[in-house]
Image (spheres, rainbow, N blue to C red):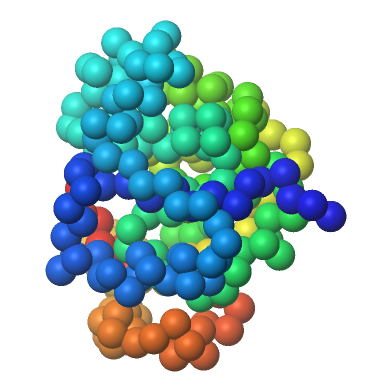
Length: 235
């Protein structure tokens, strides 16, 4: 089956100068290593603004009003998926294997956090979609119309918005893969969330150790995983 999700990888940063002390160049390069024939689209804040102005002018005033800037970046992820499709992935992911087997049957592909995580289940750090999927405009419209209680960073156009939209609209030909395929590290396992309830020192140490390992070495630790994020939480 030929995938409706095009061979494009989207990543973004505020400008062309990625801080490689935070996001290792080897992590970013891993996506092209595992997908040598795929197109890479890198987005800056200026390009995000141009995207909204040119293709989504009805959202421009809303987009321009968003603050802090991470809200603009989150919102534009919906638009990358709608306009171009492909995979969007945060800079702190390392790719471990080619994603084609996970995409070919679906029009929308997301990943889930672990069963321990009762804060939210569907992060917006990884998303894959065919272009033109109306789901993304629905999520964008919900963000635009969000009441004040839903205007925090994580709720306005962030992971909660994506999760709420997915459950609300239940898009056809979609899947949310279990955490061991997309998110084998869950941020709650090494951030001390809920006063340490989920804190696991061994996971934190493992994450620190793996940051300097090769694709092959990390893949040996997580043989089912297609990628892994180190959850830098750098806005």
